[in-house]
Image (cartoon, rainbow, N blue to C red; front, side):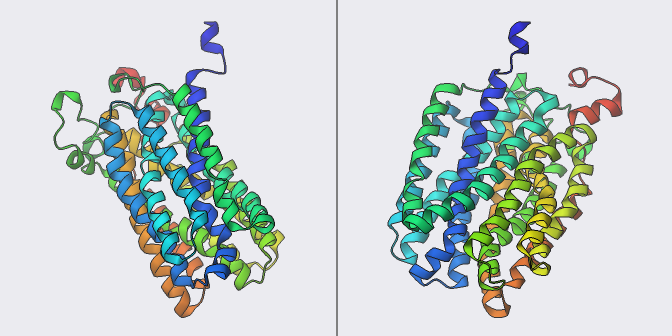
Length: 429
């Protein structure tokens, strides 16, 4: 009994470890956005090239998310697989510091996406298997949303901009290899192979088309998994929602910094404070929203908090004071919790755990393709033609799409399903 009441259980250990692993992925991915005022001047980049840099990473990330997620369902050792991925993208991030031309930098971004893409499906699917059913939304939300906000949107703008101002933007890239090596060691030492899928404390099969994929298990063989997963309504809706969410997020994060410095006239320090406020909101709301969804349901949470996402990019357009702007984006960052629900929580609860990696990889990969690859490239072209404000309009529209399609989800939250049926989830399964 004493062992069960200890805080430092394996579940909490792996939540903490994946929190840092996912956080470092987004730290490495997003620091280029905050370094862009320095890089743009040094390499003479236009808005289209800035968009292409984001698109380059996103296209390889998109492909690697789907393929890497499927590999994670099959690979013998998920632990070694994750260690290799972390080491590889850390080395690619390090070599960005040597880039002297746009072509060299875009090649490094392609390499980073290739190795970073599978990390989210691996960590989120493993964590879904290792989480207690009443904590699944909280655990996945904390490791995905809060880690993203803390490392990618708070530490990245504050630390990296300070390092670049003092030592140059190249040094900022060189230093990224240190936390990568530390993470590899911890994953290798702490992580164990996840428990068999049959022990997964997931929801009972969903009714009708919502449970089509969940009805597939190890007794049906190994063929047709992609087709079966794509029959699931929640997976299709998650793909659409996460694609809209990625349009919202990437347009805001890629073009928000240069909009604030080039159009609003903010200093790099003021710009970093505003975006750090958005990151602080992401870190806070990123686990609060999934925690709320554990209790009231995924669908109402996604619809309610998704509305706030629409207002975040509009705050950059209509506020001129950095203080008011920072307060607004902090509040409206509550919508960031919806992205984690669409990307990992809802997909893993909608299918058999045998296909959890693929279920996470599909929204992640397709969302990256649409929101991370096509969106920055096309938005960058539009920004050159009509002005940077267009990027923020596109961002708001992406959030609107994600919120609308959340209205058609089938509920997957274990507690809500238990209340509706008055039957314990274990008995349903």
